[in-house]
Image (cartoon, one colour):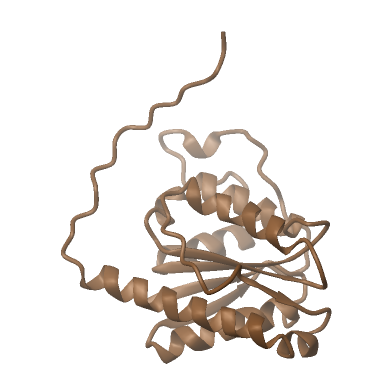
Length: 206
């Protein structure tokens, strides 16, 4: 089993990486493989709402940039996901949301019923709003959300400061342990997945 950890910060080895590494360490102690995937600091194409990815012969998003294709490829082979973001104006990184909009909309089949969680890092405030925003990707995608002992946030302006947030780091480890537990429980279960009803789309127009 493997969990993909997405670093949505432009700093590859910054505060978000530090928090995700704590989650990864707990997962690996439980025998779960991990990979931290950084979205980097280059411009990220957002969704153009062209809906081409929903056409019959479509093969994903029309923008076949490397970030998108790598993300989808890694998600195909993963059993769960943890998405990490810094807090910008009480919200996630804009670049992170841009790529998440595309992968969740165009490659939703690779996310359904896979355990998911998000973690956020802030200097002081805005963590809860950012946490709430990211969780919405999971709740619309039929993904079981893994919880911890507190909201999944760490505090610090630098990685060294994050390392001093002992409660935050413990929250990350608890999250990793809980995700490992859920993954193993699901793997051992003989319960069949529920049948998927055809989607009924209702537009609220008079």
